[in-house]
Length: 364
Image (cartoon, rainbow, N blue to C red; front, side, top):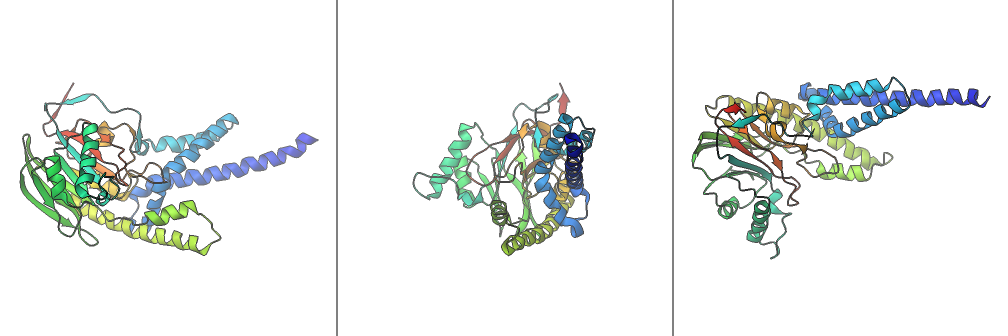
C-alpha cells in the first residue's frame, strides 16, 4: 500500500522536474540564437548570453541527474549541450590549437587593456600617476610581457604610459579615452564615429619590420548597467518595486546598447573591407561571443583565443562568470603565435596579449 501511494507523488515530482528541464533547454537554445536575431527588435535577448554559463551548467546538472535516475530524458540536455559546442569553445578550451608554425622568427607583441583610468592600480606614493604606471609596468615585466603595440581603452595620460613603456609613437582619439602606443612609426591614422559621444574606434597603419600593419583599437558603446546588475544579483527581492525598476532599466538599456554596438561593428567592418594591409582588431567590444556584435566583428576574421588560447576566456571581472568582452581578431594574413589573458587586479578588465606574424603561415 505504501508503494502505491508514493508512486503518484514520485511521478508528479519527475514530471515537474522534466518541465523545468524543458524550460532551461529552451532558453539555452535561445541563447545560441542570439547572434542571429535582429537586434533592432530582439536586442534584449542578448541578456541570455550573460546567463549562458548558468544555463549550460543547469542543463549539465539535469543530464547527470537523469543518467543517475536511469531516465532517457538525459539525452535532451546532452543534445542541447552538444549542439552548442562551437559556442562553448569560445568561452572555455582545454588545449591550445597546434599544428601550424609561422615563418617569422620574431613576432610583434600586441596587448589590449581597458585600464579604467588607472583608478585601481595601487601605488606606494598614494595616487601619483607615475607610481601607478611603474606598478603596471613592473607587473607586465614580471609576466615577461613586453608589448610592441598597446591598444588602450579608458586610459589617461597616454604619453606618460608610452614613455614608461619605451614606445615612441602615440595616438589619442579626440573626445575619447582611446590611446594607441607603438614601437613602430605611424604612417596614417583616423577614427570611426560612434553611436554615442566620441569615436567607437581608432585606427592606424604602422610601419613594422614585417610590412605595413593596420591596427584598430575599439571601445564600443558601454552598457553602463554593471552597478545595477551587481545590486540586483545581491538583493533579488521580487516583492520590491525597486527590484523590478532595476530589471526594467537593465532590459531597456541592454536592448538599446546592443543595437548601437551592432551598428558600430558594421561600421568598423565596412572600413576594414577597404583596408589594403593585414589588419588586427583589438579592444573592448562590450559584448560576449554569443552576441550579434561579435558575429559581425569576427565574420571572416581569426580570433586569437579560438586559435591559440586555452583555459577560461574571461576578460571582465564580475559576479557573472565567463564574461569575455575583449578581443584580438585578425585578417587571414595575421598569424597568431599565442594568446594570454593576464589576470592582473588593476582594472575591471584583464589585459589580453598575443604575438603576431604578418607572413603567411606554413605547415609543420
